[in-house]
Image (cartoon, rainbow, N blue to C red; front, top):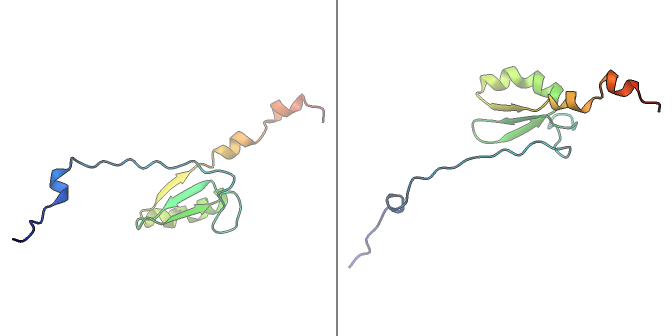
Length: 92
């Protein structure tokens, strides 16, 4: 008697997956210049590129043409800079 081949997928429920993207950290570096990365690009084939804010802006038009997913965290740069009002009262 031959073994019966079975389709494993028909005996399992629907498969759902949620991809979570970790925020970029100070350890993540621009693939172009080595500065801190603030832009994560995922190409349609699944490979990933990291860029600093400068190179992220430079390459964004072409990456959009390629239908890449772009996660831009460069607004964090504004959070890291002290405002003139906040530093006015300091006497360093």
